[in-house]
Length: 212
Image (cartoon, helix red, strand yellow):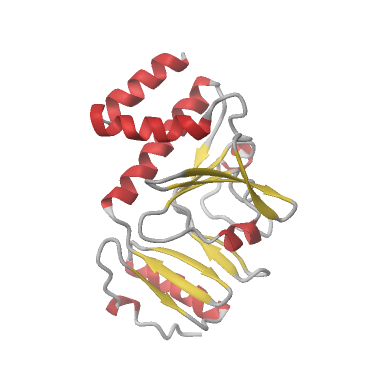
């Protein structure tokens, strides 16, 4: 089926988003194919026949990259394997949902996924940890619930939350299952704020020293 959305005509300024309603799964998949073919750098989420297309702000991109770098330092300090899959498109036809996290990690499943170049959720597990930075849009939990991502971090300038997938729904938690022995709820916002005064590289160097 040919996509009916002229993707090459869609113009989004950084920080803007559009929502398209009443799209079938086939239209969504066709949209993704055209998006990839045209090299369009937007983030998308599809759930309940609604497609949201977002163009990230620099603040959005920078924050999730900082948090991603922090996660890598913490995992390396614990000598744990990890594979980062960035904003890979995850889709599940049976649930009619699809999304692109700001970034995500396979940790418990790192060994299984290290050679994967494409994800098929009919045989592959969802990422163990997904990270979202909400600047101009709000993360849709029902899409993540349909994919059954075990742990989801949501960062905003006002609040940082840890969502844990429990009995089919997300429950806000004060403890990260990925890092149960670290005060992640306080640590992540503090480290992100430190970047504003000392810069990313210095913050990460000091974090490595503390964790060694």
